[in-house]
Every structure is written in C-alpha cells, then in structure tokens.
Picture: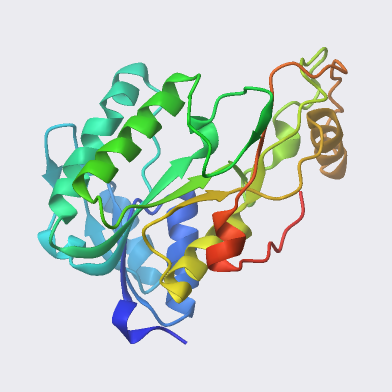
Length: 267
C-alpha cells in the first residue's frame, strides 16, 4: 500500500538501477517521474508509464523542466563518470542538482557508494569514519558532504556496494585471468533486487535522514565467489593468488534497525 503522503517519486538518472527502481515503484502504484539525458530514451520511459523528462546537467547548471523536481521524494542516481575531467566535476554537478531540488523536493535521497570506505583491513559500518583511497571514492564523499550542508536536517544517503544482477554478470569480471591478486579478500556486493528493495523499504518506512550501507551480509572470498560465478555461466575459470592483502567488510547497522529489510538474493 502506497503512503499517500509520499506517493510522487522523481528519479534523476534512469540507468541500470534507476530504471529498475522506477519499474518497481510503478508496479506499487507510485507516481514516478524519470529523467534521461537522451531524447531517444524518453519513449522507453513513457512505455513503462514513467513520466519522462529530459534533464541535462553540467557543473554550472541544470537544463530541466522545474516540474521534474516537484516530488515527495527525489532519488539522485547519477554515478560519477570514469573520465578523469568529469569525475572531478561530480561534486559540482550534485551541488547543481541539490540547488534545483531545494524547496521543491520534500525528501532527497542520494545514491552513493561504499567506495567512501578505504580497504583498511577491518569491518566498517555507518558509524565508521570514511577515508576513501580512490578518486571515485573521494568525489562521492565530497558530494555527500555538499548534500549534508544543503540539507542538514534531512540528508538521506544510500551507499551501494558493488552492484550485480541483470546485464552485470560477475562471472565476466575475472574470467580466464591468471594470478589475480588478493584472492582471499572478502567481497562486498549487492544484487539489483536487493538494491531496489532497500530503496522501496525506505519509502515504505519513511525512514529518511540517515545513511544506509546497502551491502549483502554475505562476504565470500573473491576467489570463491568469482570462480563459482564464472563456472555457473560457462566462462573460463580465473586463477587467484591465495592471499589476503587489502580488504574491508562493509556491514550495516541502519538497514536492519530502521528498515527491517531482509535480503532476498544471496552472494
């Protein structure tokens, strides 16, 4: 049953995760607005009963119909680009989006990443300090900090672990490779089904204003998980070095406590 106080959802970035979330919400009778940067994709969104919007953004400005931001909840599902120049512009883009959403979107949810945690050979959760050791982790954390400055009373962040699922077959990641390092390091992954499920549960519980680590509670070793994934899909087996160098285990205290979410897909 949709909470009538929170039934209009805008999803900025209907990519692999955003579109899956939009489809799920449509099936639950939410009213969903979805954005794309591609003219061609507008028809795809419309065919799914998603109200389509063409939204383009740079570090300086947002080019969009302001009606898109009029929502009970806005999900920002824009991962940083791998291109080095665009990667560094990511926090500024998020800042532009947040400025456009202010006073228009009742709640804002930023989709972030567990890359904000470095591989410091320990278990981390939402209470742990973030010390990113990659460029992508640093810009994602910078975006989170901007969000907290603009929305200090209502800052909701979902940090996804590595996303797997349809069209993201993990068996392909290391298939046929030899001497892959760090084979005993634990994996931190989440299936698309559970990524979407956690976002939906957030809406159902109205549990805004917190940071959530969205990661499967299962953490098999890299060599165990990726070898099995390659075998399952008929790909060449990878060969790992049985060593445990740099690693982390991402856990969540907030997902079970405030969402009560039960993971559906094992890792």
